[in-house]
Length: 76
Image 1 (cartoon, helix red, strand yellow):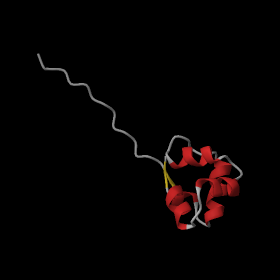
Image 2 (cartoon, one colour):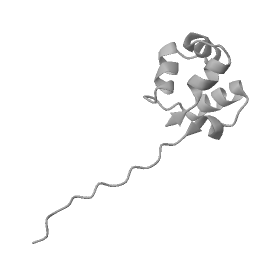
Image 3 (cartoon, one colour):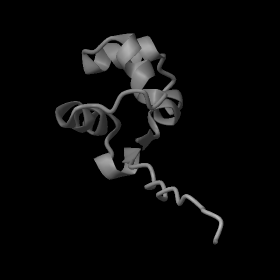
């Protein structure tokens, strides 16, 4: 899932540790969310949205679906 956490955190002048403290999570969790390695739970997503005064949809955006791969076989 794509997100704007790093951008929003930077706008507030917060380090990952600052944001983690405000959200009551580890800095590693903030890093994993920012880098897309971890999608937050719904309660945590709401907490993040409330902290920044934004809607969840304005912070998090699902990645576009990938097209199914089509195998090509030579015609006989």
